Image (cartoon, rainbow, N blue to C red; front, side, top):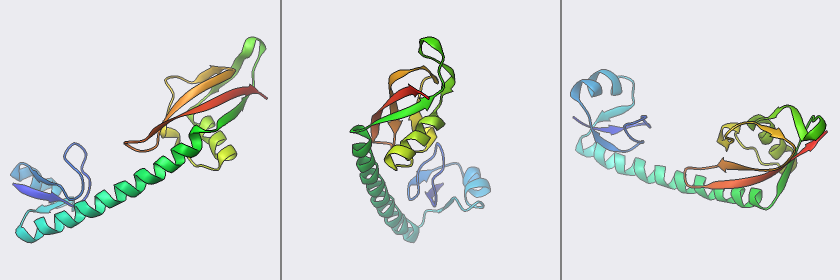
Length: 148
């Protein structure tokens, strides 16, 4: 059965996409929950409008992410942490700590889940943190972990 998605459905498609699914999946799950509607001529025209608005929103989000990336790539962020002898930290610096430091020093609010640390930082000194701001925009933020 051909349907038009009314909202994003994981592993199936995005809002406005025309997809072919099993009849039972459409009748019993997608349509009753308002996630999709049967693809008729009028609905297909409406789907084109949905795709245009989705593409415009994606473009706006990408431009905003690129502006934030330009702002973050030129500055280094200092993160304060308690440290012992030899530069080892008591505890560690996590994604949330980095996100809070970025907000405090640059005024840019970053979701901690967009920061990609392989493992928490446990030593003083300079580190690079990859940040995924958008599906197409990633930036490397330089942080300096300093003792309190």
